[in-house]
Image 1 (tube, one colour):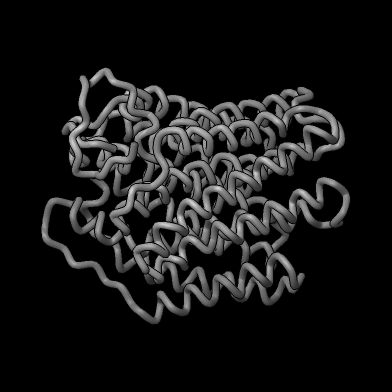
Image 2 (cartoon, rainbow, N blue to C red):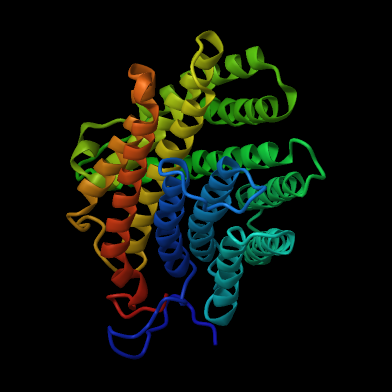
Length: 401
């Protein structure tokens, strides 16, 4: 049975509400998985364990699972919830939502089982999950004729292309498939974050600082930023033109710095749910700067990737998940759990250690990686501990969802 958001749920606060709306199971599963996946990567890379099946690149496994496993789970939860808000049409809940989660979960398990059959099954399950998700998001948007939102949903279809490329590379059918698939995934998720941040961050800040403020936005920054990012992604993935990629990265660094400067007001630094998003956006900008710097100076391209991934995606998703989970369970977002400040700070320090320390003290590279992994694990484990009861139990206001 489907429920509209205005319906009152029956039962007591101890009821099990995990499958009432998409954000609940996917935020929880994504959080738990990010701890497990980073722990496995630490065991493999730092301690020399044999975690990833033979014949599979541990580095590509790590990249794929953080992008198509962790990040896509968070995006699934966010968009299933957002589309319900945009359209007023109930998105997946109950059994269909359980099946979508099961598909994602089985794909994560299959990626760790040796042998070509498990490999093939995992890739099919991953693609099935993305198709299932894309359709579940597209149908209500089309029904409501909200065509402008298809620009957001379309990125899920590009993730399907990216995952297929990765699969073809893993099967040995397409030589650079794994790398291309991983970068399509990374840049599509960054693109999603940039688009959704433009929609919600100024609103969050204006409503959240506790005083009247009107933030600056420029249409020319929005349009040129979108077009330049598209050119940057295509150039970096397919054209092998490092000078052009670096030039586009420099332009994006300037454009997004202008945007972020226009969003600044002193009150954000008193609110963890605001400064975490602001600093996450700053890490994406820093990533563009490192992309440019990698062309000029001999620095590792992986530093820019991790500024995007750990700083941009990691901090932005954790900040958004923390906020959305409160708002959609009937809690006061102006009074978030006091643990959020330390959780976000741990993740921020982890990004600094992963991205900045290797530039300054390159002799201890493995130590910096291990410390940043430990801080990621600690931050997400603490988040899961605080938020699991919130995500499992019904809304405080008795509404469905």
